[in-house]
Length: 324
Ligand SMILES: Cc1cc2nc3c(=O)[nH]c(=O)nc-3n(C[C@H](O)[C@H](O)[C@H](O)COP(=O)(O)OP(=O)(O)OC[C@H]3O[C@@H](n4cnc5c(N)ncnc54)[C@H](O)[C@@H]3O)c2cc1C
Image (cartoon, rainbow, N blue to C red; front, side, top):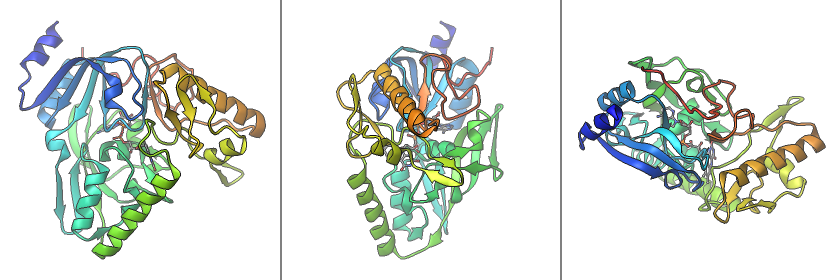
């Protein structure tokens, strides 16, 4: 009740508050129960204030890499907008709030003849989500271009240049930081060439992925076996699993690494399909696939998850911070 009173008193210019919000409308998978509270925060001061009051929360970017349980989320889903969407160019640097979309950042890079992140044109979602998961494509990844990140960690806000990263992994996954802004360093380039590369990359996606269908990108991470990169999509395709359907969830017929919400899929349909794929891949290749998508809710230990950190295999309590 105290928390609800606090939410009621949040200024409309600083935040928007919703109750019992349909999570499926917040994610590209279009799956999920209701969030008890959904708050769109527009500046850092309000975010800090909110975090002081809320016990259980989940920071959502564009919602394009997450699978939420159909069970209701008994906490606050927080989305960063307002000032968090600002993008500023200084010489060959782009400074952007974590809520800015990769699409907008790419558009501004092109307008200013800045080259480097064309590989990311067409990856949906925000720069915050992209940094968190070190999003990548065509043998490149976003953290190769990010020079500084402003984070909120242990109630402190600071810029850091010190962040480790590897394939689909950033240190921010391990320390519960909230990414507030980032500086991206690019090279001066030719606007027409940047434009052409962006368009070519987008076209490759449209031609090879179930672009536009409800999904959350590649479900499984690449694996390294005997020094060789194993592409899950290739294996899944070879095993003839394209088009396999459980309930409303289907392994995309266009790209075997994607599961699509073909027909009002439930959380359990996707989970069963993931388990099915893992079982067959393990049986045939002795390989344990790991999820690239972030699974929020559901039964504990049911999935290996993307992160070894207990906060990140969300079990039933996603991203909890104890402020009591
Ligand atoms: C059609 C399609 C194609 C895709 N192609 C690719 C691809 O080529 N390469 C690729 O890497 N991914 C791809 N993805 C997956 C996804 O788009 C990316 O991982 C994207 O970077 C996720 O960003 P987001 O803002 O949507 O994050 P969300 O899905 O909202 O969140 C992902 C994680 O990041 C955390 N997070 C988000 N913002 C913050 C923040 N500010 N601070 C701290 N944590 C935060 C969330 O808590 C969550 O754990 C694709 C997805 C789709 C649907």
